[in-house]
Length: 132
Image 1 (cartoon, one colour):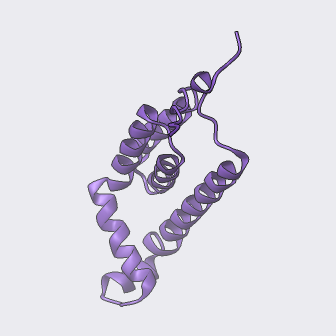
Image 2 (spheres, helix red, strand yellow; image 1 turned 120 degrees about the vertical axis):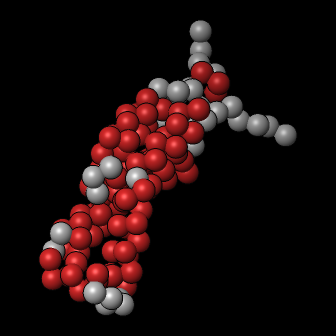
């Protein structure tokens, strides 16, 4: 029995895979930069907490507020659940970026679950195409 469009699994195209790889590397790389060169680096951290107004310090303060609320893990989990229900490349990108930040910035529980759901979403059927 031949496979139809409706029986195909959700697989990103090579161009979409390159996009996902780029987003993943950039989000993890920037999260590592923020964590080890701003948050955990004492001179920069103290200067930012003392009120230094630079781009790095504004980002530092935003990341600390988002980390305290667990936003990275929850955003990754929400996007991954939506992607599991209705696979799309946009939701994959959002979930992957948030999960990258969450894993590096110690929201690992929810971000790890989001990564597992992203992997499971590759076993879902592709959304049906609408023809006019």
